[in-house]
Amino acid sequence: MSAPPSIGQPQSAPWGYADSEGQAPAGVPPMFAYSQAPQGQPFVGQAPPGAAPPMNPYGVQPQDGMAGAHSFVAQPQVHHTLPGVGGPEGGAAAGPPGGGLTGDPFSGMMASTTLQYAYGNIQRGQQFFQSKMGVLSGGTMFHLFNVTSEYVKRKLLLLFTPYLKKWDYTRHPEQVAGGQKYVAPRHDVNAPDLYIPFMALFTYCLIVSALKTHAGAFTPETMYNTAWYALVTWVLEFVLLKAVLYMLGIASYVPWLELASYSGYMFTSLSVTLLIGAIGGSTSYYIMWAYSSVCMAVFLVRTMKRIIFHEVRQYGVDRTMHNYLLLGVAAAQFPLGLWMGHV
Image (cartoon, rainbow, N blue to C red; front, side, top):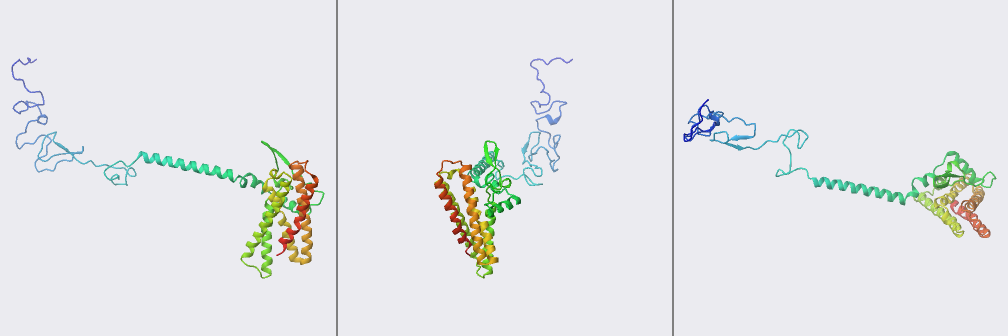
């Protein structure tokens, strides 16, 4: 065991450091010494003169003419980018000039807010459209077009033989959640529908165009004018029925689409009248016109009586007044049929 150094004696430098004269203590490796190496002898780990410096995997390179473990300068780092992440495949990462960040958090927030705002506007638009156009969608229109071939046959028979005792003109109700409503036309021949009026209107326009073509008087405006006059007549019939209900004080109780259905049935008799007139001549035409007008008058009078006394239940209406009004509706079928049948 060695004796401790005495006070006042020069002590050797700690292990790994050079003494005051720049010499490393015995047994200390030169690479840990900060003193100058003998000229011509490189440090341990230093490349010989004239040799290319080794590649440093840590991104730093020793400066020229400098030796030692701490004589390094920073070198540009190479960014390796995986294919499909942060840049094009096999190349360096693409970014904006100046090396800024490519993702802006505020842009993502603005895009999300914009999408939510647009989606909210779409939902509000759909709700507004459904609230304003509900009468032309879903329940009402589906109910008026919910027909079958059997219903169409029976309805046409009713329109051309409305005076038979077999027709009671009574609609069949059904219990539903929240109240009572009438069954669809496919289950009740007395229910109004829009299928037959529209099909009869198209048939009437086609028959008029065919007759004009046969007579050599067809023009491109024929179909347009015929459809226009037919729609005007339909509106006049609707206004007539609406006026009768208004005078009786029950106009608000009858849906206007159902009233339009009743007033549109006249095109069935008009179409048949034109066909009979084209086949049998003018005499057959006037006979069929008179018969179809009577049938339409009877159908509307009995239908309006049902509406007044069974659907609206206005038993306190002046019978003299309502009889005159219904008589006016029946009388109006003759001039309307004659006007529309004159082609």
